[in-house]
Structures are given as structure tokens and as C-alpha cells.
Image (tube, rainbow, N blue to C red; front, side):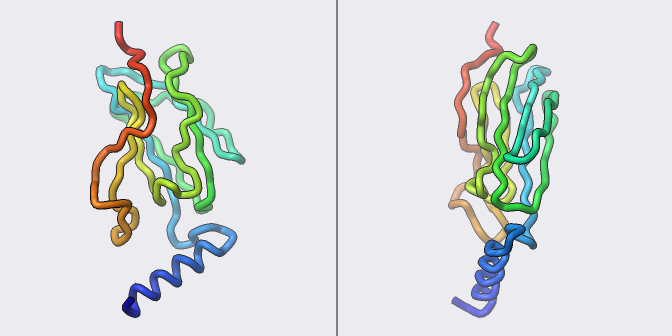
Length: 142
């Protein structure tokens, strides 16, 4: 391991051990509505300490939360119109299991997570693609 790699490793470990989580790497969660057909959903998210309330996520739009505590956990319920359950208690952020800044996509058949670069020099794997994490019935069939 060279000097630069050692420095980065020590920096990350030091930041992780601090009370505030990763001090120099703020975390975020982004969720987008890619259902199409002009369909909106209601998203209700919460952490252990905060309830973010109901948000109407219109087709093609996204929303994000930013925080500095890497050990934050965020769960969401996703509803079809008139509060019909679609996905319940999905974990969008859980102690950094999906990286520092996970990006999610709501689609007709479920919830997908982008798998790719985390920091630009650390990778989640060799692939960069959408991975289906939560399955849902197609509630928009008529």
C-alpha cells in the first residue's frame, strides 16, 4: 500500500470512529419516480429520530435527504393514490449498507437501487447498473 492509500484509509477509519460518523463525507439518500404514464406516488419516510411526513412524488421527479451521521437508518412506505399500500417499510439507508449516497428508483414492478461508484475511488463492485431490491405487484394494471 502506498502513502496516499494509507493516508486515505487512516482518514476514513478516524472519521468513522468519531461520534458524528464520517465527518468529511456527508451522506444522502435520493429517491426518484420512474413509473411513467404520469403516475404519482405518496412517499412517507422516517428515521429513528425524525418523521419526514408525506410527500407526493410526481412522475419523473426526485427528492433527497442529506445528513452527516453515517449510522442513520431511513425507512419509507410508498403508496399508490388514496393510501393504498404498495411497498411498506423499505430500508433506503441502513448504516451505509448501500454506500454513502444511495440512489433509488421507483418503477412499476418495484424499487431499484443504483449500483456503482461510492466516492469515485471506492467501488461497490465491477458493475454500474440498476439492481432490483424490493419487488411489488403491478398495482397500476386496469
